[in-house]
Length: 102
Image 1 (cartoon, helix red, strand yellow):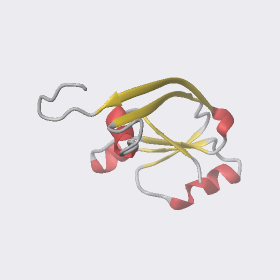
Image 2 (cartoon, rainbow, N blue to C red):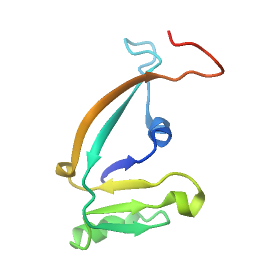
Image 3 (cartoon, rainbow, N blue to C red):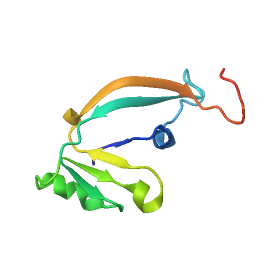
């Protein structure tokens, strides 16, 4: 129930999908955005009720510090699309084991 962002392109790549068999076969996209987090609610764990802090007017967003809790990446959740400014669209292809771009 929000828009999810991360500071890490590696984390964003986990959610990127290609258009298998289509025009963009093996091509993925990443949207680089400016995100206004405002007053954020900080948590180290998974908290499905974090949105309640937003609806109660206590915070503007949630910062899930997964880096601190399970040594992965921090995630930011905003609940209003006006807090997001898409700035760049990055189109890329995953390369594995020394492969060259097509």
